[in-house]
Image 1: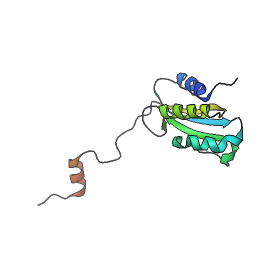
Image 2 (image 1 turned 60 degrees about the vertical axis):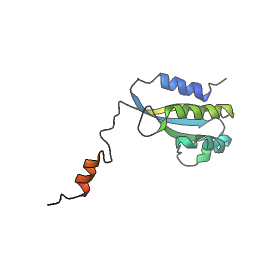
Image 3 (image 1 turned 30 degrees about the vertical axis):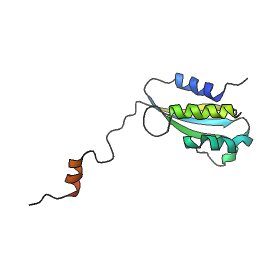
Image 4 (image 1 turned 90 degrees about the vertical axis):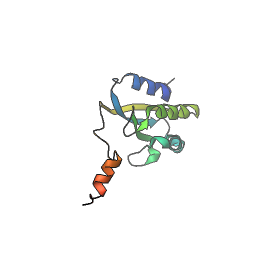
Length: 123
């Protein structure tokens, strides 16, 4: 019997270094007929496809602690839901980013910074 999606996810995560930041994954369904139901369950993971979504091949990104991608805990939960409804497939790691850190905030960080950017001093 093939491993469940959660078991596959757990094995992929266990094989990563502790500083992994993002995982790019592919989910290939055993039966493409389940693509519509799978897309519905996976929607919080922001999946994408190449070509026709009915092909049964989905791609998505997972984030470890911050950054772009669904939270690792959410990925595991959604894969568990797919296991519960009988969706069978193969999960494959396509690419991993490690030790990625944000450089700085993209927004304003303080009230004084807002004032210095938007208001001229009164003279």
